[in-house]
Image: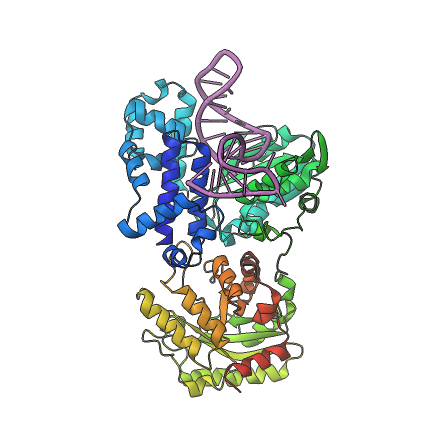
Length: 574
DNA sequence: GCCGTTTTCGGCCCGACTGTTTTCAGTCG
């Protein structure tokens, strides 16, 4: 429901832009849309509890509109706007180079009502004759439509970050380039990425940008000036991705990095703080009149504005500024002591227990949990109870031979469609570590899905709920869970919620991690690795955890082995 | 539309690049 309302508010903003509405009113609708989209609970519940009214950015007008939606299923402001602007015109805004003003002109002058009719008008040569349009802009629009068709939308972090790293390396090798930084949503560790933002220090901006537009893989040059260039490159997943490069001076690197890391919303808040002090913040620095008072490094800017350094993962305008430096002590990669969700050759993994243990040790881990699939996951070569016990025996044998790293014998047991587990309790009781996950009947309604998850949490032998939402980014939606119930049950039963680090999953997501933290839940950050390479995906999960304000003290696998063992046996009263 | 130790009105972030403008509007981030 929240998503539907968020979309309507965003559409109202789009429609107001097209009809030339007040830009501050438009911003206000956009802000409300984002706030609603990120709420952990349904707006209806929050409204009833009187919590919605207290959120900054939500005013009386918004409350009225939400109440209207809840009672009538629609919002009159939205409906009225749609009588003057056809809904198809909103699609035009997705075309790069085409914004609300041009969309409005196309609609007014030529009766364009969607992308299809726009293409027809262009073919007839009508568009380039319009005031404010010309040959070039029509060309750009056509390229934009093509780009829209070719690009695969947002790119998962697991694809975007490696691409950004390769490009950063390429730019670093340009003549005259001193330093390169990856900024934007990759630096913030967002689960999907719109475009890549790179930034470099170089003496000759024009030359650097020129070289940038000629690197391998560029399919289109969007813009190329003396400090800024934008190109489109092929995306290894199919589709394409836009890459922006900005050239800055050494003195402004901190300000530029801060600015280009975003998020936009976070930056707006920072600039407001600067204005309140009578200063100005831009990508070149923090200025008191003409005097630059910070900007060489990021920390200096935050300090001058009266804040502690805010880690990039928190820069989303989700309360990180209001809390005035009272930020959580975020979990970091170095805090992780072991990976507790790993598959070996016994089910569908590609490495043996020995190989996995050695790889874990090489990463500096003190333990690793082998968690193969249970028999219902036939496609993943799930183990029967007997096969599991055989595998456990092998793990115990390997464990005895190892020094400095412990291997826990575990399972990733299926939560079946009726809520029961795929192994009986007496089998689970023989294991060190039990993750329970849903792999089937994910389309069940909210009530049944929630009950299944809760039944697993209530089982005394289950230590963690695996990839709780079941989503696969860009492929499969999250299951329809009542998160409030699941999270409070996890807290109550002292069962951990997994943050699965596979970049296709990142499940829990950042918002659910935050909700889990607020409820006092444990989380466990694991890769679900099927080979030793994938152990490296832990980094994506760490960033997601940080985005969810996760602290070391609530992350199970940040504990040393002795404490973990105590925690595990306490779970079922042992 | 939202907000307020500049509080119920009058503000609301900042700059680069492009094309069609002959001084700037539109788009984008």
